[in-house]
Figure 1 (cartoon, chains in turn purple, cyan):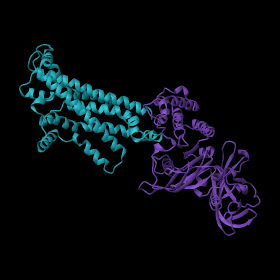
Figure 2 (cartoon, rainbow over the protein chains, first blue to last red):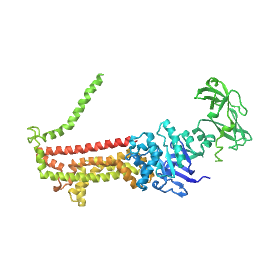
Figure 3 (tube, chains in turn brown, orange):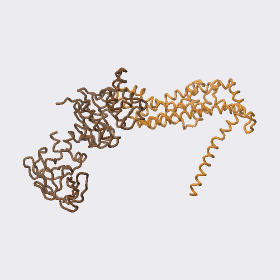
Figure 4 (cartoon, rainbow over the protein chains, first blue to last red):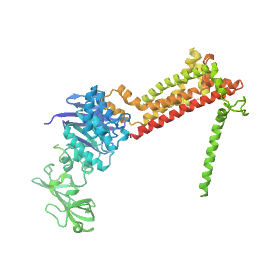
Length: 362
Length: 267
């Protein structure tokens, strides 16, 4: 398969108050865009700092290109970081900031100037070469931080929430630009964010982190369609989780029942057996609220309210035991069910997934 | 409404009073340094004669030289020691950090009289000759906190990622110190050293204990001059020292304010 650039093997780190990272392992391939996604305090920044060498792990190995560089100081590693605060050198102008990584490596002046010009061109900041960081806007500083980190031609670029300080519009624009840049240069990116949308839009693979562990590692599609755990299902996208007992399995369809009724799910990924307990995840935009039961489903609910969500209608309803479910339909507000009405929840069985079902295979 | 107006009148009066109490005595010295008569309180006409006499006084010139050498050297040593201490303490989060920090700034709180006696006792015990060497050692000691506090507060205000970014880009720790840390804290180092110069220039008590007959400093001269009756010459000298110290403190504040603006503007 693809060539492995970076391997983290059984990395653990403890700052004295419990494990920040425990037994984290991942192989990152050349040219891949991998995102570490998680809430703050999940260990994603520590993981990044262990790769850059700014932190040393208590246990485990950091291997780059087959070479163990666990104990190497950051200045020896062919890895550069874009910091969340940009960390531009305030006493140097843009040009000198970008040149710094070349200067300390002893690149000659001519080559430095050429590379700096090339980098500033790449991030469309050529006319700002002589400005001081204090004279730049947030978005401009961001570009300079990226140019500075790319200048020494790192094999791996680490980005620690690089868009966290930008407003939404600029964020969206920079997401597209960053992704384009990464494709163009073919450099491997490890990207940190707590924004699930950003992760899904940009990554080749996402590692969802929680409490210092990888909760799930997979492509955005795998993670969205087949969340391995309850946490992943709830952290990424909006969904309804339903528990029940498998009643029957036929071909690859499993019928599951609970006190609220029964429903069907594609069990191709999960290998369910009759009598087994399981939990399934249905994404809100795939959940439907119909006025009559659909084959394979018998899941009545009482409508609490309906809300227009721009192009679609959200129906909030409760099942017999009080579980809240949300469905998204494409009907118009005038056709939507009224509060108090009984609706029948259903979905395309292929689009719901059994939690944990895919993780064994991945 | 009434209350508000009252406060409007009250606070300027209060402020003026405080300023008068603080600065009137100093103003007296300045004014009477231009008095052609010999006694404070009896104005007999304007003259700059005392200043001329002061500049032609060989003993004064000696004292001035001593004071300048002492101030510059102590501020210099304090600059190095205080800066290194602050960097060391800021970079290594030791368990004893707080303790070391209070220990380093303690000389500011200890009564000068006690410090002076302590130094004298130490120097006699280990056989250090009193004079310039002893003066420099003591002044360096009480100047260190001014540099230390200044530099430490700058380092704390700095984004640690700036130094990390330099490491990340390939700079060794020494290189980071040279290229990044020192240039960024330099305004605070200099501002701290300016304060140190000001402190050294006006110290009487500690110097009194460790000086020798050949190494009289300006403040000591003022002190002994006053004991032997006091002359308008001393007023003139005090005025000049006041001006010098004012300039150093003002420079120190200015430098700080300017570089702070620069650093925070980039955040």
